[in-house]
Image 1 (cartoon, rainbow, N blue to C red):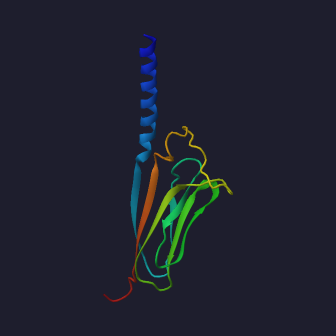
Image 2 (tube, rainbow, N blue to C red):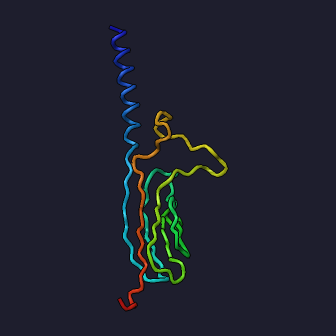
Length: 142
């Protein structure tokens, strides 16, 4: 009887550990279509995502930009700012994602709050913002 109870507890624990880590596999992408005129600046306030040590970072930089940044402001608000290259007309794309940040001077990530059995899967709320930007002069004769 004692062996059955031990076996049951071991199996229950193993199931708990594997299912609690599996929920960290979801990723969400949100595409934002933007239309600008040449030299116009665009800003977007990005909602917080991830856990406490995550920040939004550019993971795919634009190809035709004067300014393309992500900055953390007051109250941990994150703002994406984009200005196309001077007089540029065409399309551009920027991808911004919540990424794990380490303490300064540390090359190892902080331990996951749920334990170390999740093999580096820290999020169940990873999100990527894809900014598809069209820059066109609306005053030009068509």
